[in-house]
Image (cartoon, rainbow, N blue to C red; front, side, top):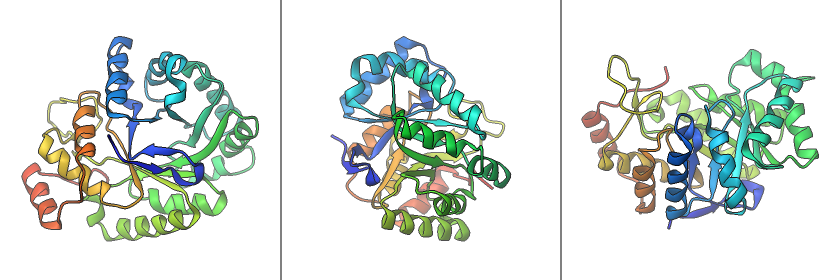
Length: 285
């Protein structure tokens, strides 16, 4: 089975690997149902989705009718104003076939102008707070992509006491001194305030460029099991962080297999060798 850790202050013991349900965005219900069997086999108990992930919420809905008690369920809103976010939250609950979720997150809140709108009067933050007050969610979080995510999450935590954050983490990104400094500072704050830290892009190899797309993931992912093992184990070497799986149902078993066999992080020399062999490049500039 996969190790479980307390998900921040929520009290929920979540598997260290969280199912990134963007993987269900373009699959039919039969394939989605097969994926559920994979989650149950590995004991995953935490699902992270969003209304912008294609048909993901619709594919999860039938599962919730039968297995709601087995999963900590998280979704997001990418809207920035109160009314737009409120309407989207209602649609997500309907698509997911639930009357509440466990975690509702402000999605990819890294643009400074969008941040001011979402966090200001009449912004999306007011909608998620109201959703929590009405029992539509138990907890609220914030997510972000790109190099400025940790710094923007620090800013968000100064404005509001979020229960979780989500941002990229992989070996190549942490060779950037600024990102490392910002990420380390964010980790310290989250540890002190018992804020859960979710990470994404663990197995990113780089941009597709001119390569033929062989995966549903928007970036070029690692696909060799040994390479995935090292990348996943390096992320899990960070105490307390959670790893969200990549947006491809075919990669899911490989990531879960790597997670289940985690016994410790690879050395820096092993990671340098992986970067060279797999020609890994920074995904974000």
